[in-house]
Image (cartoon, rainbow, N blue to C red; front, top):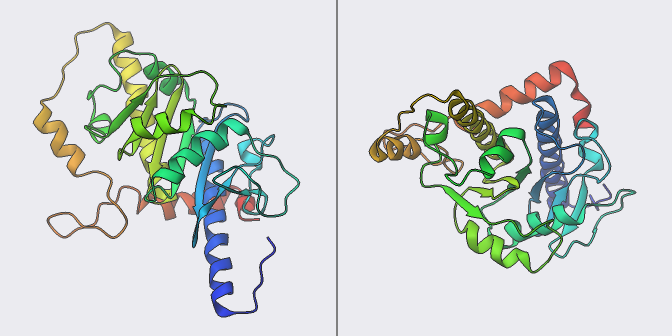
Length: 263
């Protein structure tokens, strides 16, 4: 990155952006580790601190385990590359992610995935069922958007954000999943729990056995204890670990195995 570091404020901005780059690259590596990739065709984006009109996206053509802090591409809401790079971006990634970032200032990180379980549930008319605690974390927090084909049409952005509203999760029918988090760590944690919920739903339905569904009150209770913006506390004064405590542990795991995401 080329940044004027003459002033302390510029140095601070550079440090904040670099940390965001490191965290986002780690998120890509974790997706590769857990098999949540579709070759090179899905994306994770993060808003650049202090520059809400800019966000970071993966270089199109690289596998997720090749993404590192320095090769992430900085673009604006209109899809223009705004920092020197040799890498292009994928238009479909720009359309979906720019729509969410433009409409949702609280969405610092957006994950769009085509996992096997996510695609399977996206094809189910019932959507996500509250079969497990993982699924109940998202009770009342899931939006749905009907497929409009490959996401190359700028006009789809308005319909996509209208369907998303203020929810943190959206199932794109016959397509995949989308998660919008207040931090990169929170977005990853939501994706983890969502993917676990969807895998369990596919397995449970495939069993052919009679299933039990919890009461709406229980689902609402579990959802209320779930993901919260950074710094907010529960009624008992404690901070939810979801999206907070796991992230440093996940970074330590990556550092033990392959710290090259930091480059």
